[in-house]
Length: 371
Ligand SMILES: NC(=O)c1ccc[n+]([C@@H]2O[C@H](COP(=O)([O-])OP(=O)(O)OC[C@H]3O[C@@H](n4cnc5c(N)ncnc54)[C@H](OP(=O)(O)O)[C@@H]3O)[C@@H](O)[C@H]2O)c1
Image (tube, rainbow, N blue to C red; front, side, top):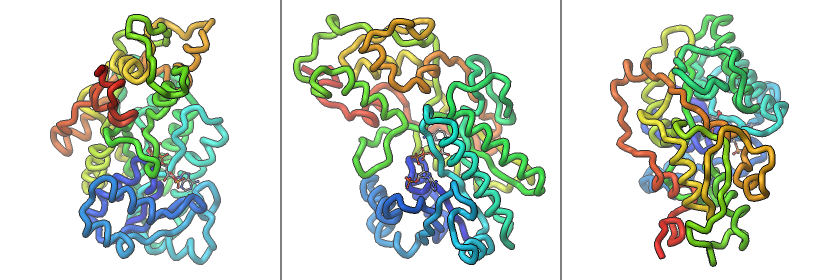
């Protein structure tokens, strides 16, 4: 079986490669052209994440890299190479994307919407009728802050919290329309926010909550040095818009990849099979504010709405405006379909404060509160 994967060098894609190599002998990596050596980056991830030596040594023989640009027609390939690729594939995993919540809509659409359209065109172009596994996001649920979001739902009636959500919504609409028009099955996997406790490393893709580490730099007078931090009671108070009973679903990326590969092993229904790939417990927004307090010398107070007159420090702590609304969310993502097919999915991983600190800014004397 010929299995291809876009986005294999990404935060999620690297974990998908590792899981997929447990069930397939080889993979075709549709790498991002001009973005560094994909094989080298995947190899480095395997080494840093403790993969067995035998797996690391076998990578050059098991991964077949094709350089592509998803934002271009024919993925930027020569027509003959495109045709060959289209004819030989049985499965396409589409994980590439732009995950910058606040990017301008045109850039997000280029990668997330046009990129998805070009992947679907590839799936329709060849003799092989490959099955498409599209990585969406639970956040196509948009700016709806309460209630339950079900796996079948896809509408824009609540609006969106940021441009990223809108672009991913538009991409999923394309995927579902394509499935209907072509009478082809598609699998849509919608993870929540993906996280890890693997410490940050310059050779690894950044953690989706990486902006929290930038808050530290912005809020520490010494440009990131914890030297001379004031004691907790003297730290400045910053106001952040959020709900004291808010909660957010954060899914360990390693567990998400494992669940996705299990879902991919099920027989498709023939239409669009949509799955929420989420953790069984949400994380309270107060844990996220505690995370900010753990890594930056501030005290966070949740307020009803974004302050009209933010102090410079408050502006610094609110430096990822696309994310801040999630501190007000109290909705839940239903994953009944996943659990009814795979059974209960306890990851055994508690996504709490220590777990989050490790993945964003590994614990030091100052972040543990030790003297
Ligand atoms: N991270 C999350 O919390 C999260 C949550 C829900 C859903 N998702 C979805 O999961 C998928 C993977 O996200 P991620 O966290 O792995 O993102 P990521 O770490 O930013 O990785 C993005 C991947 O897409 C590739 N890519 C970007 N533009 C491309 C282009 N024009 N042509 C070819 N490849 C391109 C990148 O290649 P280079 O690195 O070589 O540029 C990289 O491999 C996305 O669809 C995202 O929407 C992510």
